[in-house]
Image 1: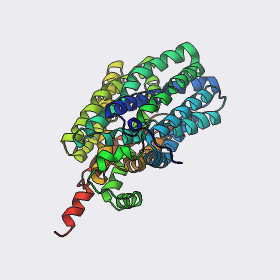
Image 2 (image 1 turned 90 degrees about the horizontal axis):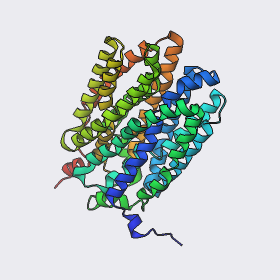
Image 3 (image 1 turned 90 degrees about the vertical axis):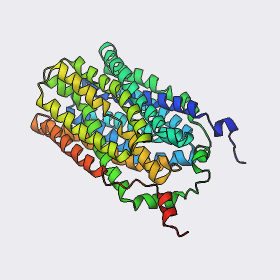
Length: 414
């Protein structure tokens, strides 16, 4: 006997899905962006070095990326609500287990493997795959920007809360509290529950969408798709490097540890504006040019930060500027994938691009820790960040962003 979902679950309200999806991303990303605040307390309590903590974060990012295409395909096949609920539950289990560890290996298994796998179900790929196809084409970029901004709202609200929890409860108590918060994502996932075909109903009506295998073959043969992968790799490197190592970098420069927490919070605050602004830009401007501008601007902001004296003011200005540019790449990159290939298999195709992002994040989190351990400073890591930002800006320019179905129609004889 086939189980059929009620009509109101097969075709959820776009606005309910948008609200639930944004809150899920708020919780998931808000907790994740505060992990850098645990580095020093864990280092002092367990006696593990920054390279070991950075490795746990790097494994998290790598698992997050390698599993994402498969989890995205599961969401396309079985529906995003079920996947998000499972991800929220595993996230809570991973954080609760991390509060009990006593070694670097334990950190790698819990914060690395378990949390990394959990995040594949409760962050951008699955949530955008649930929300974007429900929206009319002219509002998809803005909707993606709102979901992306949810991660920044979480960063702004939860990073300071994490700092307070670490100071008041210790790092173990703070992780236990975060586990309780993560469990709230399970009931919120109900807002994303639907028949997997229903989310694509608006997108496929009259569009003649191709099958799953054909979509993968089209993407594999499209040069622009691989350029998007390369650019998003750079984005992942930047996000993981800054979020994991910026608090310690500022402390090493002689600033109060609270400055690092404030900087992460400000990054989140200003990315609320940036994510929405770039989401709207995705509906109105050519996405590849806006993407290039973001990467060039990141290079300039990092260079200016390193040239200026390290003070609370310059740390604040850097956080505001890099925050505006922080996750604006997400609605633009996912938007380009949907624009070129359609949105029926957006979770799968964007999931593959996101895997590249997380490989970059692995190198950003672990590689910067490795560089610090070997050289005693983050100078080389900052130089690499600037160089690859310039490269990513160039790589996005030649992307051919004409929808494949339109190109096929033009090539077909009348």
